[in-house]
Image: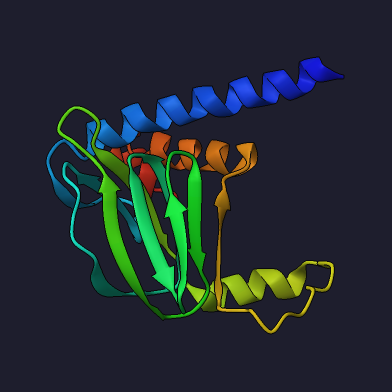
Length: 170
C-alpha cells in the first residue's frame, strides 16, 4: 500500500514544481500581478520584510515557494511551499515575509472568494457538520492536499489559454 502514497506525494511535489514555474512565468517581476482571471492575483517577493499589519479579505492563498509568517489573534502560522491560508471573513493579521531572495523568491497565488457563491454551493451540498470550537477564527491554514494543488495548477493553465477561448463561453 506504500506505492500509492509515494505516488501521491511525488505527484504533489511535481504539481508544486509546476506551480512554481507557472507563477514565476506570469509574475516575472517583484510585486502583485493581476491576471485575466477575475479575483486571481499572483505574488513575487524577493526579500524578507519587517512585520506589518494587513487585512485579509475572504480568499484562498496558496504558497509555492518562500516562507511567510502570518499572525492572527496571537497565533503565528508559518506558510511555506505547498501550504495554504484560507479566510472566510475579513480578518486583521500581522504578516512578515521570512524567506525570499532573487534566486528563490516567495511565490504565491491568491484567489478572492465571492462568499455569496460559496454559500450557494455549500447549501447545495450535503456536508458533514463542523466540529465547534471556541478557537474558531474564520481562517484555516495547513499543507495543501494534492487535490487543491491540482486545482490550482488547472486554474494557472487557464492563463495560458488564448483570451478568446477563456472568456468567449458566455
